[in-house]
Image: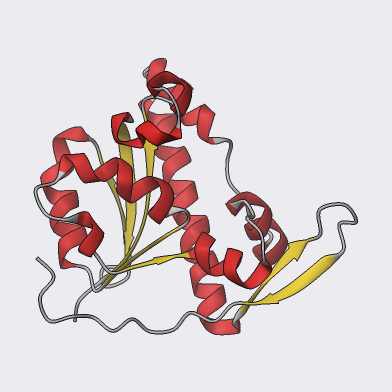
Length: 188
């Protein structure tokens, strides 16, 4: 059976370093972490592991992440010879945003829904890279994958998330239903 993969990437640089969001293709990956449902195992991929990461993404029935359509996959595109846009994916940010009506951060929705959160901010990951604190960088990225996986599992089982309203902090139960993907026979 083809695998479901939850993943997250961190970068070496920021949008400010590359001249804005329109230059997302100029961001460089520092690390990617992933979870395999088939193997019930977490993986870490550095630049030297890109071939293995590419194979994992290509072989997956679906890849799951938070903001992967806007960030992770566009950043990774330059590293692979295959068309990464053809990889079947579920972007939890887009699913929640569609249901809720506005963008919400992973940390907030995970803390409210699951009682667990991120271990820091994305800029922390860039600082870890710059200071060569690779252990902290890996730990940060793995935590994002764990939180994303737990959030995905919760949504599949319960079909909702909990989100605090911006100005009142009233907790809103937002229905989120993720439909199974129709996977084409050949992707690449």
